Length: 80
Image (cartoon, rainbow, N blue to C red; front, side, top):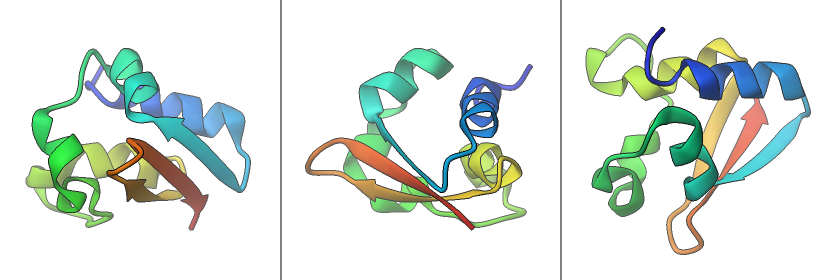
């Protein structure tokens, strides 16, 4: 199982058009997030195909796009 599979599975199981999760909740699902997730919007990029963005594969496979709020440490996942 890949590190971000639990996030993918959670999003798929929920299926709502908009899901808001805290960084803390996501970290608990995946065994921790790197500091860059809190510091850089680019970590939450929705890019495909780059091995640099393995985390994006999780939410994209679930059918979502990520929109982070670094100040409040939240991510909104929208069906996309």
